[in-house]
Image (cartoon, rainbow, N blue to C red):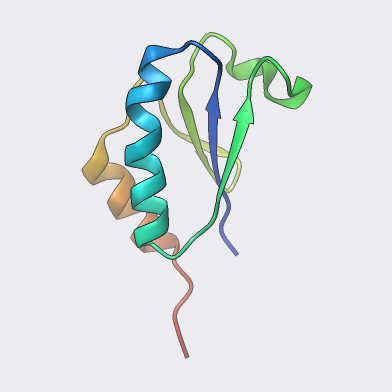
Length: 83
């Protein structure tokens, strides 16, 4: 199962712009999204200077901004086939 994590922080204008795009694409791909606050989750501190960050299966897909088409393509390739 694929995991998608959106790393954000309060007051981040880039995060506010990217989040609806990420949420929509993840929903369209039939996946679930975990939102992590970089300031509240010690495990996310490495991303502190790079928010927003999109992690796919724990690996960085994007930082600072989201390329909608690139994320859509990446999510499609990670979807589980339906039986």
